[in-house]
Length: 304
Image 1 (cartoon, rainbow, N blue to C red):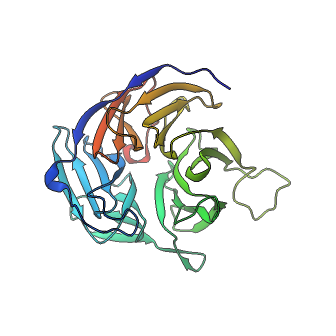
Image 2 (cartoon, rainbow, N blue to C red):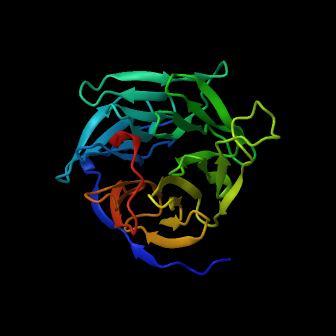
């Protein structure tokens, strides 16, 4: 369909120290892995936060390159995003959507139920610039059990399911103009695109416009976390293939980023002095990698 795009190789800048490995710990989601890192997000001061799902831990990588334990609690934290007030919002497979105060480390439950039932297992989240929160409720959904959902929490607290019947919704991002929501659907190896404005003629109760496959991927395990740049290009972590891909706003592949660590490239966030440095997590080796990108990342709600 397309020729192979140019490629670069990421640089490993940090690896989870062995003192933080917890062999034999049993997790309902990741069995007995000593760690499985995910969910990077950057605070204003340059501290990078990332999660360890089976360990119920969130770590910080300081601008000086030191990895420190930020918090350990009874949970399975996956994706993170930082609120404009500095709180760290976490999509926790076990506890729902929680927020953590970066100073006191106090945990607040934001959402643990929707439509009169418990959440099935949140995976990732993103903020609109007005403070609306979108998150994927993945649970154990797959191509045979397509009960995954995308849920929106308005800044005023109003909660609604806006997409459902999804076979494993994972990462999600908004287009820079926030007219479209992109969702990584891992078990079909695809990116879905959903207009957030409902056109005339659709059932008035639906929350999104006509939704379809935007990018069909192949190989590996499937798409995971995503990020978007100022031009509307989308970076997609392709776990199981050891790569991240940069696609244009019309779905053309522009760049392949090869992992400098393992195959489990899981998520990413833009940062650095000019916001062109992509920080990437490789889950199986506990590595943080970076790659210099052609366009600066889209400004996030955390940096308003």
